[in-house]
Length: 57
Image 1: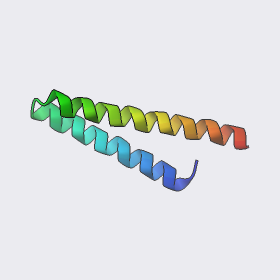
Image 2: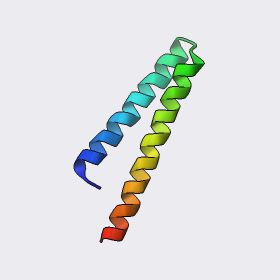
Image 3: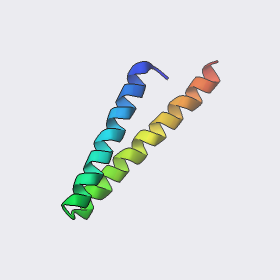
Image 4: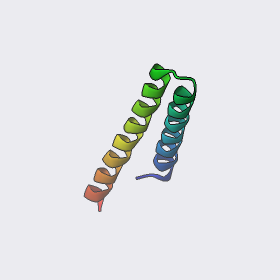
């Protein structure tokens, strides 16, 4: 996994966590769900990059 991919995935995860927390604080279920979805997407991308790295070795 490239360093820039790791940074991008970490950024997306943090943004997702922020949206989830803000949605929880504002009692906005839509924003909270959007944050959780972004975190899940970042996790899946990270897993995919790890699989690609395993095959490239």
